[in-house]
Image (cartoon, rainbow over all chains, first blue to last red; front, side, top):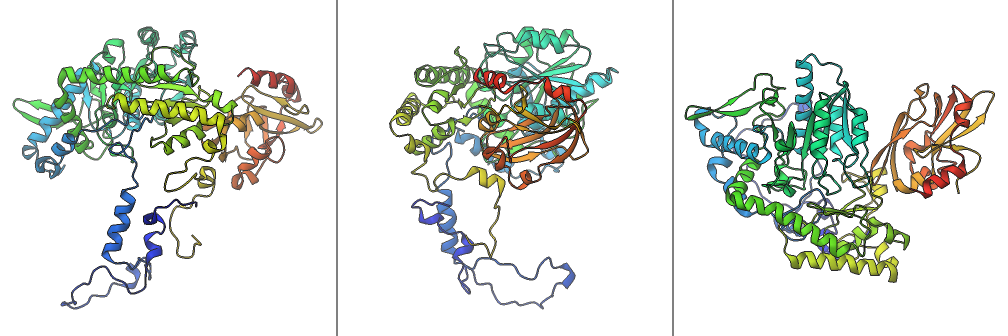
Length: 488
Length: 129
């Protein structure tokens, strides 16, 4: 592995080990020793590093300083909505009453926490126009699975056993087909038309008695609002199907459009994107499912209900069951609740306004330099193609790597699949014009570098702690853990 | 320019008839396909003895960019798979029309292969993509 100049990462902790060095001295044993039975031991030797306490602290602090995060850098990773998470959200979640509560604590001792969850259910129901809400699902794709299981349960409860197909546009989130398949459906891909909307003729062709429903990402992964969406919902409903909404891009719609008003039957929200809770390291997330009163009986358990003045956990009548151990990722739910309460009505609306304004500003500044396959007003993100740069020798991957040298996180690449050399860029609503301008200038400079010094771009990054990694070798021959006899 | 000794599908697979009498053929993905996919890291291929169907999914290919479906160019029974690809998927990037073949098939009907796109038609098709 090529290394840059950062000494803190040159050696793993294991490689710093010196025989006999200790970080802590334990007091002498003052009780009789109890040897463990031999058959209870997993192994006889455990090669732990022998290091001092300062070495451990310096090692991990050094690693933490290499973190690339939204608190240190601009992070325009399309569709992931890497926006700023206000610190007050954490402060509230760390309150002892919230942070110290146990999920098995008696219900009468958890009334405050349950009240918060109940109010959050209400807020999310109002925001989506889908009033019945379960907070139990732990991530976006988890919510998708929950929603699709509800659609399946609804059809089966009606004795409608022939609805095996779910249609999904080629501009939907990549997890949608997997979620539909996990719920037992056969997936049919719907093509986009030339404007990036769902092709209505293609939809009509599959809208028959075997169609269970469609899964629509709105705005789509092209960053576009499907202008035929009401007609899409009507066609599906007329055929007896239901419409699932992937709400991962809801920061474009907040306070302006309600999915329920458009005709959606079930949708999930990504609290860890839209409602500003930390994500990007694999969690924790929260993907609540919102639905109509008609489908409410199928929601995943538990939901919080109010009886008189007290709150309780209940299982909806025809619930698809539990999808998580307890009540969802509570700390994430507290953060989302805080975010909504600190913003209020007007603030919620300004999220979508700024998200769409920032993306369109960036799109218009860049479209003379980078090819824009769907040239129309975008929502919260824009999808460019690096095909003009590829003709001059640098693909989307090289451009993304070069951006790291400019101090920006790379955009999402090669997705959606319908755009060649896709660069999917989401500036988010929380960045200033100065930051977005600097990012635009970096992409314009890189375009010039592609012409003037292709190798500079194609060998990037040059300033990061490690240089270009061999992604193909990492996937083909994964080397996942330190081993005592390994060369490096 | 794609080789003229074989036929092509719109899904970017090729098929080359090896012996008309025994209905044997070899199939793979095109140079255009491997170029679009980028560095390939994993193949999921059908098993020997499995039946595959013209333009129906027969496996998956994973590259550093994406996971994509593999479609069978022909209807028939798989007689051999390229075991080398399990450890060396990069053979398809290096030599998609030769060492990087995917499967050998005993075809139900040789005429089905004859009906596919010629090299010339396929190259014209990919030029328009």
